[in-house]
Image 1: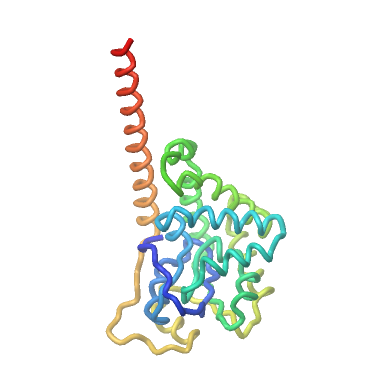
Image 2: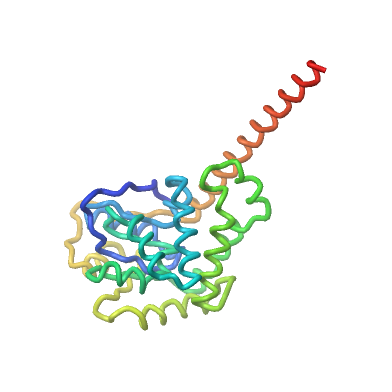
Length: 257
């Protein structure tokens, strides 16, 4: 996360499939792509948590279809939500690479990378926030986000099928890299570290380095914490409103009786 949700631009074709796992600089990567490709880019975490309320239910449908082996329906919904975008990055798309390759045969696959040990620690922090025991209740009054617990459950099942692990570890990271090397033609697969700036990414995409434009640097940890607090605060405020209304109705009924 770390961005504002983007909107599709009619006529834009998907050119880049981001295959990097969450917490590998996908937010910085997505912003960089928006500059290089001159079009809107789709960051999964941002669109799901800060985009239109229907977004999260669309992804739940995609994941459920994928888990039930209905690849055709999953691809149909994928194509609908990605229409008008120049690139996609972050989960759950980073676990749907074969399906995306079939939909966009001319797109390049770029995987953002980082040190596996630091990745494991970072993702463990995210998983802790995403699985807080009270989220289901707190988020219930919020359109879209009331489905977040269901979405996380589907996402975990997707990862279990691909990597055999519900709680990601360094081994998950290594399995993901090996999986990409198996399912993506070598001439279409590129690995970049966002710490290296524009150079490797521009080389992979055959683009010139933007003159006078600093490479985006987004702190994903801060952005995730801010987003979590934002939705929890919204949920609590909505619940306060519900209890105020219930209290007012109850007071009114007592006066009538």
